[in-house]
Image (cartoon, helix red, strand yellow):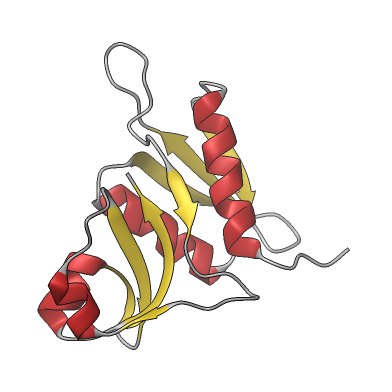
Length: 132
């Protein structure tokens, strides 16, 4: 069975693991998912990401980050752009700022970037998801 939206599957697996207080979650790997996971590590939302080789596409093992009182650092994940309705943000849209909390992760011509770095680089792109 083919998957319609692998990014939504990626976010849902992380969201479910956080709600179930799991320490790690395994996700089928792709280059896009690996870049998104590495960006979440840079933004300090997850602890680490490892690529595990198998005889298929590989597995991303994501270790989640929790506060000392066992609350997840990730309060929420929301898919912004979806296959049926793509959402694109220009540099002007990003520089205006959003009134919503969190960070928007964009797919730009310079790679997968958070909104702050995209604004500094002067590029816009497809808004993949929001994390807070």
